[in-house]
Image (cartoon, rainbow, N blue to C red; front, side, top):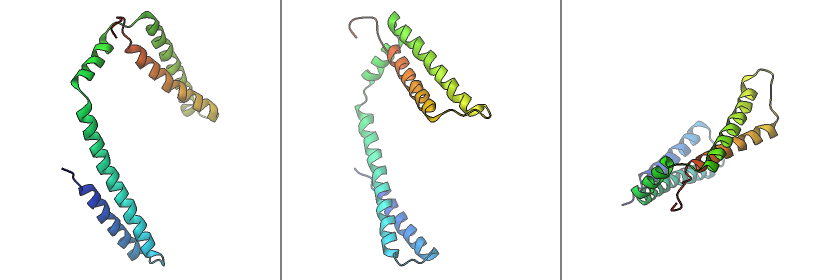
Length: 142
């Protein structure tokens, strides 16, 4: 059963917003503005319904077995090579975050935009590499 209350609320808020716009400032293109407000509100309401449906769909698809396998991988022994990758990625991420923090906290010290971008990518890449290397397993049945 589909709940269209979000769409109805979006439609009603669009009408109320259009009427409020008419009362507060009378414009020549009032109908155009009301139509734009109604369409925007309808799209927002439809996006809310679609998001709720997508969440319900994904919630049904995630199985307990997948979560158990992830937990098993997380708690299993990590190979030496991946431990090294995890340490290096942790070091790189920490260093990049320290550089980014220095640009914010130190007075009179500003980082060039390219340095901010590179440090941000290093932080994201380091965290990702650390998480992926943590879930590597030693046995061949992985």
